[in-house]
Amino acid sequence: MEKLDLYVNGQHVPAEGGRVFARANPVTGEVVTEAAAASLDDAARAVDAAAAAFADWSETTPGERRRILLAAAESLKAHADGIVRAMKEEIGATEAWARFNCILAADMLVEAAALTTQIKGEIIPSNRPGSTAMAVRQPAGVVLAMAPWNAPVILGVRAIATPLACGNTVVMKTSELCPRVHALVVEAVAAAGLPPGVLNAVSNAPEEAPGIVAALVAHPAVRRVNFTGSTRVGRVIAELAGRHLKPALLELGGKAPMIVLEDADIDAAVAAAGFGAYMNQGQICMSTERIIAVGSAGDRFAEAFAAKVESLQAGDPRQGDAPLGALVSQAAAERIGSLVADAVDKGAALIGGGGTGAMLNAAALDHVGPEMRIYSEESFGPVVAIIRAGSADEAVRIANESEFGLSAAVFGRDTMAALAVAKRIESGICHINGPTVHDEAQMPFGGVKASGYGRFGGSWGIAEFTELRWITLQDGALHYPI
Image (cartoon, rainbow, N blue to C red):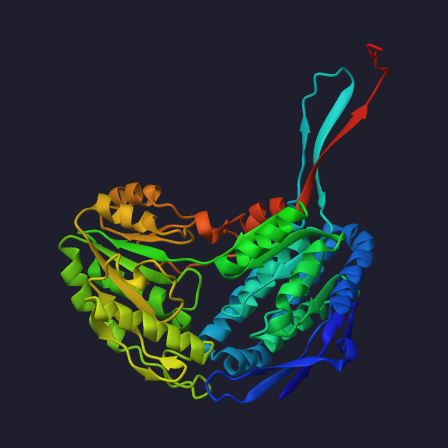
């Protein structure tokens, strides 16, 4: 069992009173991590350390920040074996998913390094004689970063990389479900040469999360908030941030639709749906949750997809001999079971399924209708709904019925027709003839509606984590009316 401290002002320190909480392996139930359970005073000390470090870090040159972030990418790669092991033990991730997390997260640090010289302003023509007007972007201050457990390295790094590149200091509230993974990520990045206080990490007992988060958001030194997680919690974060008039970037839940048009390449659509619906056991915000098949594509797709679904079995990720690993908890598996049972009871046809404990095989439900819970509820597991539509117009209507709007996909050989459909889908992201699960560090990543607001990635991330200021220089005397 691993034992973890908080990381504050460049030091590993125990929580006040030596308080800890435990995280168990979702497959075996054995405790694999014992992590410090921060108090409200611990949380405040972490923000104070970040605030104290801000003045110097915000004045570092772009080249120095770039050097450290590039070193952080290499450091993360060097820590990969320990991170992969922790992902298997804390959240039941497969080797492939854990390795991919480390690879993409390292790319995100490289991309963040490239942003340090792209934080630009502009000269704006002024109507006042002798006045030079500038729009200038400056670091905002302390950034509160909150990342989830499902893609813990990718989303953990994403939460801190651009803020650091922009000259902000960061307090990361780690996930209660993967405290060791997030601790290793912070350790790897900090080891690249970050000065004390620039990056801090606070872990907390699950039952104390609401109080810790409220205190962190309310702290006067916190100037920006970013949160990736469920829409339920995101609403709470949004309300807290709004109460304190602090900008928040929220990337929340999804119910990604994949529309299969009648002229689609069925084999390509099946391959993309298999990956999009079941990678990481369907526990990705972009996971394909609804396959909306148009007209004659319905039967052709369902028949071909059945073979794919039935080939995807779950196994203990520590053994590494199955394409799917475990769900994050037994409770998550039971929830998936209830969604499947509800749909079957109401007339859906089950394809695949089965499994034991927290390990569920891939499943699909054909002929899903609005009366079934899975039609509208985010499943966040290895099950996908196949919904039949009579036309492309009906498919778009079904896609847009959801409260969510993160990722989407459209498959069709007539790419211009597919593009016309894509433009009508209410989502922040849409891929034509590609899977709903697709992430690149330089892309504007985020959703609409209940999937949140704001964008991670590239220059769009710079806008989220800097203050835009208007500054003027006056040359010559001014004449005033009074």
